Image 1 (cartoon, rainbow, N blue to C red):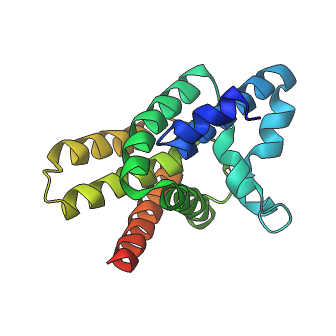
Image 2: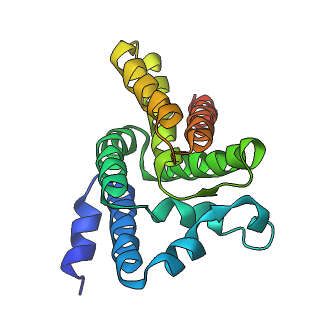
Length: 185
């Protein structure tokens, strides 16, 4: 006998997006209940990378407040649904994870003393994936370039935002999408 949740996930054409949003929501509730201790346990911090490599991934599920999770959640919902429907769940998951890893590696290279949380690197990777997909289909990318530019600029202007992770995620998403699309051809 299958549970209603499992049946719903199987019918959904974007199950990875749904699961990622659910995990982000669950972690946020846990952060609210358990406080900063959980946030710091999940956060990416370059000096701990060798001893605690899982932080590269867990950092994407922790968020720094309601505005942070709302922006990232909405962006993941919109971009995730679009990209996952086009490339499929497995490739979508690979692009998202590659973007998260690339975002953390960019932080290591450019700002190793910072503590990073949030799914933004993965979201910037999805921006890059959508750009490459649109370009491959011959679509106009002007509005997408404007949105990416505005979001990158916000990271440079607003204190406390890791523009390094955003930039790394953008590169990771572009490279992983190009590799997946070249293999597909």
